[in-house]
Image (cartoon, rainbow, N blue to C red):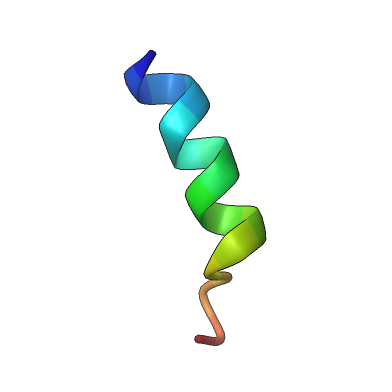
Length: 17
């Protein structure tokens, strides 16, 4: 679950954000 959340966070809020 945590890993999945990380992937979603990267898509919703990329490192650039």
